[in-house]
Each structure stands twice: as C-alpha cells, then as structure tokens.
Length: 123
Image 1 (cartoon, rainbow, N blue to C red):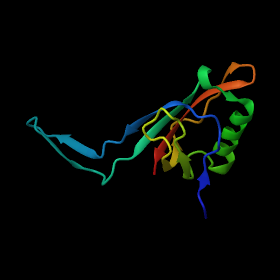
Image 2 (image 1 turned 45 degrees about the vertical axis):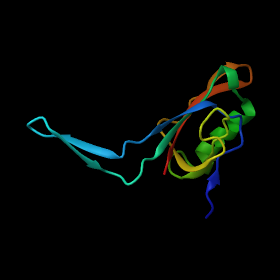
Image 3 (image 1 turned 90 degrees about the vertical axis):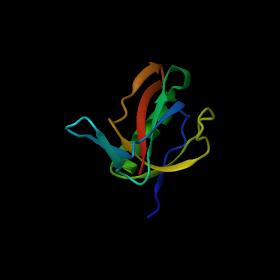
Image 4 (image 1 turned 30 degrees about the horizontal axis):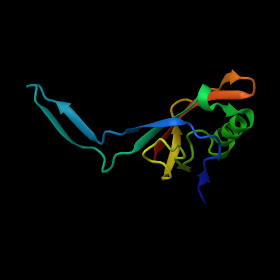
C-alpha cells in the first residue's frame, strides 16, 4: 500500500524544526552522570503554523481537516510530507512523518481564512 501524501495547500509560515535527543542519561547517587545512546538516529519534529500572514482559505482548511480525519486518521498512519517553505533549510526535502500532539484547532483570521498549527514527526 502506497503512503498518503500531504495535501498541496498554502505553505506554512517558516516551519520550526527540532531534533530528537537520541541519548539517555542517569544521575548516580554520588552526583556523577552516566549517559549512552538510546536510539540509533535522531528524528526531526516539524511545527507548522498558518496565521494572519498566510491564513488558509476555507477550501485548504477543509482539505487539511479531511486529510487529518479521514485519510491518515490522526496520528494512526504515516505519510509523505515535502517541505515547501522557501525559508526552511529543508526546502524541497521529503520526509515520512505522522501527526503528533493535539489535533488541528482552527481559528478564524478573517472572513473565509483560517489559522492553525500542526506538529509532524519523522517516523
């Protein structure tokens, strides 16, 4: 089965990204800290925001909501996402991700336009 592809909607404001800490550390009774790698790789988490400067038209809002609810069913399925923000260092790169965090919460910015935030994490 082919992976779903994130819908072609207005790009978010510059996406923020955060690498996962692949290490684990434990403080010992004498105050010394020991650490080791927990994972063999560090996944990226992307925080995508649409706001006043790039609000989603109602059509794109409905497309994103349908993708979240019906195509990938929230965080249950992974999908392909291509970074389409020209201000990101990952512009043009495609990642296999899934939704994490809370569901998209839409806020009306002006008539027919919506703001929201979503979080995607590499699988």
